[in-house]
Length: 114
Length: 113
Image (cartoon, rainbow over all chains, first blue to last red; front, side, top):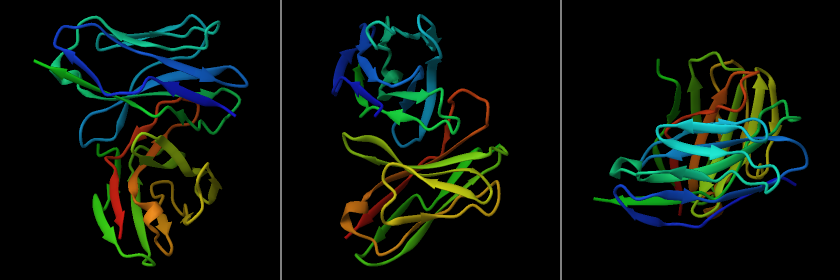
């Protein structure tokens, strides 16, 4: 079945450092890919998405490119802030699944220190 | 606009007790979902619904039941609570045709002792 694998955390960074969170997936069809973010004490919210190969999703300085050849969707940000401290989830949704169910990775906690 | 509202936020249950987690959304979304989040395990889908009167099992449905009598409400029922059901539960919704954006509630932290 479909699955999403993310790098384990926690990832601890200093402010203004470069952030990369690796995400790879296994899917039978042509999935849409997502990054969700969960700030402390809150529910998840969509950060960015890409629906086909070579698409780049971007939001709030974060970027991720849908790489079909490597089945990856790595999240990057050039200069993190303390407010980026959160748990980041990579997820996929099979386009053939009209019910839009998402398969999530285990999440990666990011801690940014001043 | 409240979005997705879950109650209660916290609850402690004894083994064998039952309870209902409430979920309401005011966005007129047809699709609703219940996930549980365990440490280091990501989110697992328990049940989902594609409209009033239509529900189906997700990945981990055992020990839970749902109903969907209205578009707005999607309660999750725990029968005979067990320690393995200690988790954080998230309700989410989305509109049909929108590629993937789920709107989540703030979560309900349940502890079974």
